[in-house]
Length: 185
Image 1 (cartoon, rainbow, N blue to C red):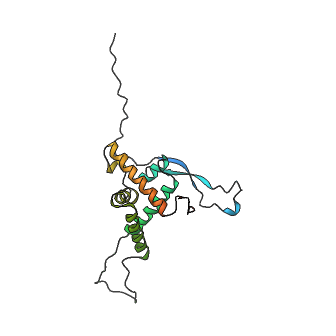
Image 2 (cartoon, rainbow, N blue to C red):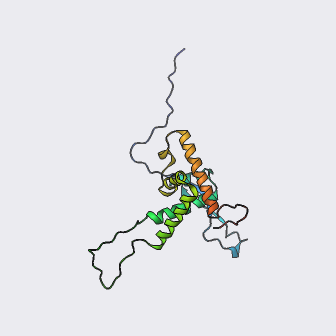
């Protein structure tokens, strides 16, 4: 009998830079939906859209159905608050700059940033230090779970912390029905 060589069936990694994208079609809420024309076929509640499922860990979890719509809404709100706080950051005063044409001094913090900071403080109190830190890194800063945890057990634990935190935020913000409140948009 002749010996056969086993073929190596591993995928070859492409060399050089590759875009981090994987486009998938999903159903999302129709931004043009009108309750006035609810029964009309040209006015669907959900429409098909293409999204990059590798855009963030939250989107990946949502497309794989590991988190539900209320958890996704809570993650998106947290991300919006995080970006409002850290987008431009607090400006500093430039005392050497002369104001021209009677322009007043600029406020280093906007009202939106202050409100976002207060809401994130409430989130930290609701979640606790560890879960808030995980939420900030994954939902806020956009880190992948694989970046933060190396072993399978660590990734599973981190994902569980993230999902529990999203549950708590969804309940606190009214996205998840506790049985006593109606869902909010």
